[in-house]
Length: 438
Image (cartoon, rainbow, N blue to C red; front, side):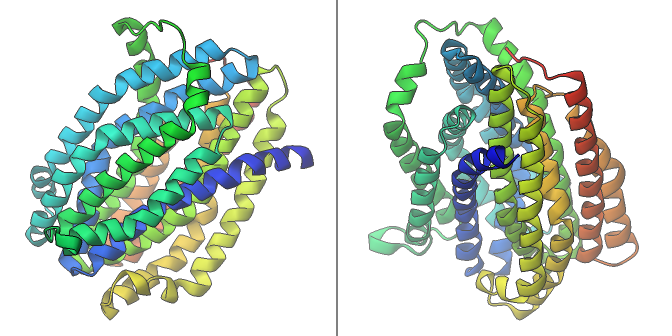
């Protein structure tokens, strides 16, 4: 166990740092737009929720190559890993077109869901510009997933940290019109994302050009049939990722029924919770790679799973303590509005309560992906969020009148159900035996 923890930590810390830097770009967006006012901040938050609710299917489908590449690497089969990369890159353009199209439906979707008319103009502007960034984002995600499945984690960390350092000045240049640029307001945050993503992709491809040449197969079969087979493996993973995201998007929509202040406070609190979530997400990515490598090499992968669960639990207990003790300080940089600050701070103790469950569920999914169990875990999300989490949140927050805190307690119940179900599923899969994904 001690040896496995060291190996897992060596993969997890650069991955978690890269994930934190990636989330840092979202924090920069939220902080920069927050200076434009409550409506602008709420508009960007609700546009992001709507846009990603559809695009998450495309983004999550990229995970199909994770078990293939990790298990192939464990077996020493470079060609299979390279073919998986080539086929997923072929899928990036059509998937990104579908994701961008969903972003363009933002004003129609928000009106159909009864969101405040005051936030829709800013939401529409932000979504229109964000749609253009998706082809680049899909390629970045594919290359990053490929490298992480191989156990190569530092290049993605380096470029993501670089992107985070660039994000604030680039955002402000477009938002406020620095250096002769037009002042674009809310749209400037989205244009900043597009510019920074392009820089990240260029530098990432340069840093890993040797690895890509080593693994790129000669004359890969990119016909419709094999590419669609890969998509058939990826879509359940996209749905799995989507069912979680849709639950949190539904939380944001319920905040919209309460009002703009609730939406802005929720955006701040969920942003902070998402920052802490990047740490167990990095552990989960490392766990998927380690489980896949050990299974592909014919070794016992149970120790890797246990080590990931222990490491994830430790990180989340620490994150929960930070939220509980420092919540009122953490919300201050996001907005100058004292009322929004107070409401956001009231949600962070609840976030502290669900940190452990949130970490366990994402690590559970990572372990199961590495073991080739890519379809059954989706049921855990469906039951946890849609049978327990959202109904409880709706009842407490909307019907019983507890407002944003009631909605957050509901999603905490859902996270608890999901995490406990996945831990039980890992035990079943370990006893039954992992599955080779080809």
